[in-house]
Length: 316
Image 1 (cartoon, rainbow, N blue to C red):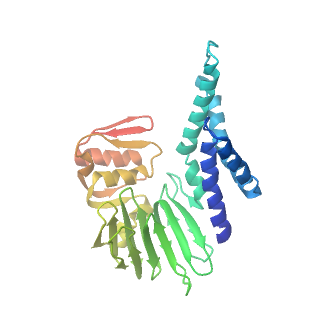
Image 2 (image 1 turned 30 degrees about the vertical axis):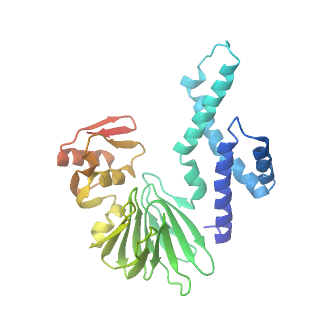
């Protein structure tokens, strides 16, 4: 890991570079805005960061232009607007590819995992973090605090003791502060889950009127961001950390939650098509790291129909 102060400065540059990258592709950009960009680029660090971001989108553009189906397109020179439209189309495709290939997240995160990777990382203080598939973190350490932002997905933390330097995980507007050593945080689409396997953590939801809560070993707290409610239940390590084995152990869980977990290991998109389908309940142990096996399980358990066309899976 790079030094904490350098991390913070670089992530700020990354966010600004991504913003400028998109704004500079606006044909209606004003002269004043362009002047602001040129002032920003006078900083050598900003300039290098912008070049890296531009390289990412340039690689995407090159991939599009190298595709035979696109390379062989012929346009008639009936209008001066056509070359411009063609150029804008390629640029739009490149920008889309930039986001599709996780460009913005790559610029923000210190570590991220792919759909088939669950890496374990040792932080500069000796703490160990294991990422679930399709997860990302950013690390901000200084002399007084240790903060990890869970930008996406799920991670298990084994915290190294450091008196006077609290260890906090931020997942959206929810803060989880270690009062012990080992816990798991899941930043889902609609809720945030915290499971403690050793000692205790303090969970502080960011919603108005939501009270903080201590979660102890063998307990799991789930904060519903829409309703602002927090639910607590007992849980064992084998169930809570089944994801480390590529599995999902659920009891009466909504299908939408199960699909979200399967999708972590799938590079395409899984869509639920049907009224009330997302609320159907699922129980069992599912091998989510094997998409075909997981979908087969759902077909047998719920009688749903599964149709796949390339990277798109539709469940009816």
